[in-house]
Length: 513
Image 1 (cartoon, rainbow, N blue to C red):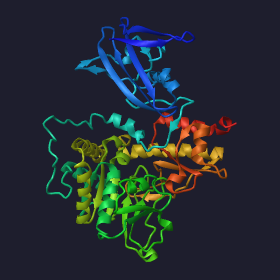
Image 2 (image 1 turned 180 degrees about the vertical axis):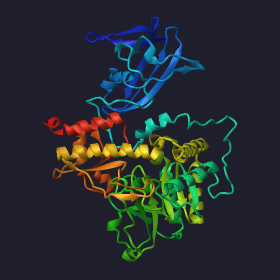
Image 3 (image 1 turned 90 degrees about the vertical axis):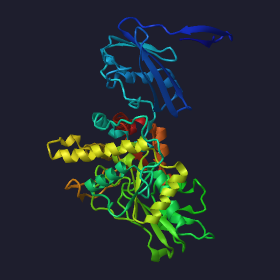
């Protein structure tokens, strides 16, 4: 493990080449070698490293995207303080069990820029691959809807959710030729039906379930199916609309393929053409959390109208379940239901057989189905959720119920945010009416996955204000077809990021003066 590196001597102008070798740590020590890189001045930062013991045994390694910061910060090694702030796990290699890292007497951490430090009996906990605490001067990314808030719950349920897939399994493209969606595993279809029956948020009887690579692919599949069934060969593309503020990705998802079948036409409230249209109804709405119905009526604009209901957030940890949705085409996503965004699983509940077939055809042509490994994992996790409610009647603790646990987290965050907003007076949040939830059998408020923040200062761009003044990255209102005084921020980020966000928001007057 010897490498050559060049070193430029400042003021001399010459280059010296020297050999650098990896040296074993002393007895009782382990050595962590790390490196990091930054994509640009303040954008994506990544790090990686590995740990070896005093006899050169490899113990473990890691690589991680760690958010938004500067190249100076990551290269100077400051991120590696997080080694001391999170849970260590039993370390295993080739079946051999090591002591938890915290039990080693010393740790050597070696950074790319020669930043060395050691620790004696550090905090017990090596981080998960994505658990990073923010620095006081770093950017906090609240732009994306990455649902990592739920990671702690699923860490406790790791064994129950474990699946084993052998090398000889899942080789075929095919899953169930008797089903319209022939690449969907029957176990996943049954698990989804069971979940909706448990929650009571959607009707699945006498309907087809089409699985997709997340709800994004299903949205495009729905556009393809609805528009191709409406147009003759010489018709213009069908107009796609949604009431503002609408989900910021709808315009790009509609037009990215430059299809001759459909085109984005903006705010449904302003649509007055005597032409066919597809209206997307998102409820609860992304970004503002409101409960919605269709805006357009056939007798208003004169054109033939079709509806897509995006119900990604119609789950009891976000909003009361007031009714069982029975729409012709409904979209759901595994990522916002349980937090497993990386599995890329979504599903559509479709009443019309021909529409379901066309959606299946779109997915077949774009990705030849959906990963069976992901389907297997999703089916197992949904089964664990459903079984927990069955076992709750037998004495299981409420804290082990996913929706109750997640709702308590969302409620706590919203209460903290509202308290800070009321104190500083520079921003406002929407208010939501209480409603009776048929799932929890109690009256409840809505706790959306996103906060729709309004800056009270006249002509102030909320996105720019938060980024420049507080180093908080959010998504501006213009992208949602709304006013720039608004911005959307994620409520699903990690606890450290959310706490740092609240801290900066609380001290905004001190920071900006």
